[in-house]
Every structure is written in structure tokens, then in C-alpha cells.
Length: 372
Image (cartoon, rainbow, N blue to C red; front, top):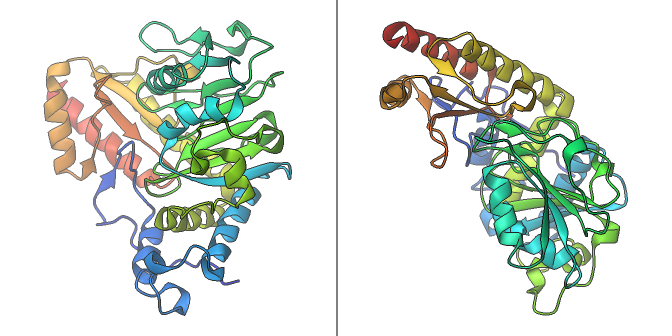
């Protein structure tokens, strides 16, 4: 089967000067963007655009197989787990999890770690009784450690949000539990190695580290693939999608294609160990500058700080509009914090190069000299 190859002469950034720090949809590697541009009119010499390929044909089935195998290789996924390519984003799964994993009346445990965990809790409560095992500290500055979790041994599963994009907190370790551990990993999926065998199910939207919006990737253990509840539409059944190789209906073909390119790109960069090392270096550089500053400050407890979404504030919030405007004028884009939190947020997904973080730190230093 033909491999996915990237042009060696792709530019270092989209324009050579701009860096996109958006929380999502996030920036793509220039090599991946170049590959999309090159292949879009004629995919692998087929005479057809990737946008036109029938999802039931051998070429697209081959692409899905490649993507699935590359993911299995990156994460060393055990053989008793299925990989599913689902429609929509992670928010769809907030309601689909209890409908697929719980018997009627069965409860689930949820860790409240911040903005997106609260969203997952609110949606899941519409379908099942929940037990909140712990909540983030006041001001969303720290995550309750596992020894403080009030777990229910009879719960159908325990849900965690591995990384909070809005408030900049990240789980650093995943405990072994007596019930299936379920994780929303939308924003830090494939940014570090994972002990997949500790999880019953992992789900992640694609538009952070896997490409573009419209696709949600699931890794689910075989024993959790149960017959769907009556009334659950077939395309939203994990068991039926697994049975049909994620082709129960037309999958999001273009988003899946971009995800396949991203998976191959991550492998070519050295895999998840290399991603983790690069992300640690980027985030440490930025946090060190923030912590040494008199103008900037990070509210999050250092042990729980995200390596992916760095959230911080200006000690004088009146300067925020100037900061964002001047940053954008110098090619540092989409640094505004989440609407519910405010402040500044720099998202350092896999595609963000170290050069982008250095540019940001240099700008922050200059802004502080001017306004500090």
C-alpha cells in the first residue's frame, strides 16, 4: 500500500512569520498542509479528489486501515481494543457515553476538573445518575489527586478530562481503577505516551492534534461494546460502529484523511516520546518566563499545569486588549483566553514549533519592558 509522504521543502510556518496559538481548530504542520494541497485534486494518481472517493471502495478502506494501524503503533494499543472513527466532536460523546456504557438506572463516577469536565457532567446527567468523585479547587487552580477521589465500586465507569483547555489543568497520571476508566483526551491526545490498558475508553476530537473538526476518535475495550439501548440511533452505537469498521454510514472522509496524515507525521517526528519531550520543552520555556515576570502570572498549581494549554493573566487586566492587538500585529495569533475564564491562552499542540514559543516569549518580554 502506498505510503503517505511529505514534501521536504515545506515552509517552516504557513507564512514564515505567523504562529497560530488557537485552542481549536488548531494549527496544522506546514508539511501536512502542503500534502493536502498537493493531493486534493488527484489522490494517489486515482484521477479522483479525496473528497470524491466512495467510502465503501478499496482505496478509502485502505486509508482507514493505514490510519488505524498507525494509531495502534503509536500507542501500542492492545489487541482487545477497537479503534472507532465517529462523527462530531467530543461534546457528542458526553451524552453517548452513558447511553452506550450504562444499563438503565446504573450510575457513573465523574471527576470535576474544570470547564469541560463540567460540560460533560451536565450532559451525562440528562441520561444517568452521576457521582462527583472530586472537584477542582476554588478558582480552578488544582485537580484533586486520586487518593481524594470518592469512588463508587459499583459505578459503570469513571470519567476524567485529561486536559482542561479553558483553565489550563492537566492530569499527570492515570490510576488503575476497579471500574472502567473513561477519558476525554481531546486536547492532549497523542502529546505523550499513554498506558492504554488502564482505560476502558478514550475519546478525542480531531481538531487539536489530529487535524480538522468533524471527527471524534475512540479507543474502546471489547468488553464495553454492548448492545445499544432502545432508541439510540444506530450511527451513535459503539457496538454497531465497531461491527461495521466505522462504516455503518458515511464517515467524515476528509477529516479522517487529515487525521491519517497527522498520524503519519507524528510517527515521522519520532512518535509520542518525541512529542512529549518537545511539548515539555515548549511549555517549560513559557512557564519559566511567566513565573519570573512581574507583569504576567499563572494561577494554576505547578504540579497540575497543562503542558498543552498555557493559561495566564496580566496583573493589570486593563493591558489585555493592547497585549492581544500588539501580539496579533507581530504574527502571534489567537492568544485570547477562553470566554468563560478570560486572560491569555497559548495552545502548544504538537504542530506548534519551538520557534513559535520563542517568538511569543520575546514579544512578552518586550511588552513587559514597555508596559511593566
